[in-house]
Image (cartoon, rainbow, N blue to C red; front, side, top):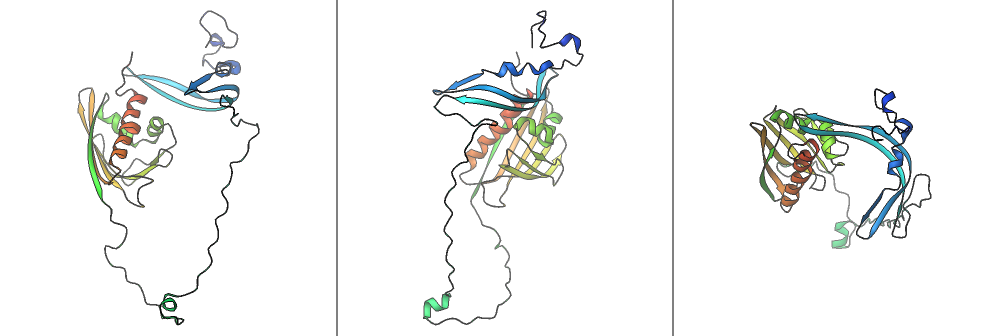
Amino acid sequence: MARWGEGDPRWIVEERSDATNVNNWHWELLLGCRVEEGGASCQLTDVTKLEGEASINNRKGKLIYFYEWVIKASWLASHGMILPTAGGPSQPPPQPPPAPVPKKVTTSRTQISTGVPATAAPKRPQQASAGTTGVRISTTSFSLKETFLTSPDELYRTFINQEFVQVFTHSDAQVDGCRGGKFQLLDGNVNGEFAELIPDEKIVMRWRFKTWPCEHYATISLRLKGLGDETELSLDCKGVPSGEEERTKEGWKRYYFAAIKQTFGYGASLY
């Protein structure tokens, strides 16, 4: 934005009540932007598209950011390679060789053991026995507690509202915030369904990582308790596959608790 009083013609704020960015001059601020880390560097050389909007809300002294941008740009890397750009040359990644097609084996088990071809036996109906579906795995459980600088109703809404989930996960999400409603977030790496919902008090969900054994879910219970200007969240998790406890625990701390606090200001210090 041009500084007040400089009269920069690229930003004609005084002539527009909606403060629309005139002539898209903010594209120029991105050109030449350079990032360096670990001996490598990357610099923007061209911006072909920048569309979207951003807004900042101040609610009860907390800053809440919402943004949705589509940016198409070209850049140059420092390690002797040019990254693909829009409209620039690119080569498809190498494809693995096709897997060999296994030959069909027609020898029966009876022929292998006796050397005599087996005759087809009549098929018998299979009877399903109780308790044989699925695979029994060893599981564990854990508990967490966290305090958020917000009310129980606002924190409750953050977990079951699709728009709020997409904001703090910074990715597309599908959230049906009702009992029996399913959810999927973090690029499909987490999914499940809401088993019990008590508004502003309790959320129980069947929850799983995509890499867990097929159809195995942990049961996660979230209890919300108002403490004046704060809300205490108690998490109880049962049925986590053995060896996945730390990964699951750290995932909740990082991608839920810390992300919610940083995005909505429910724990970050504001200066």
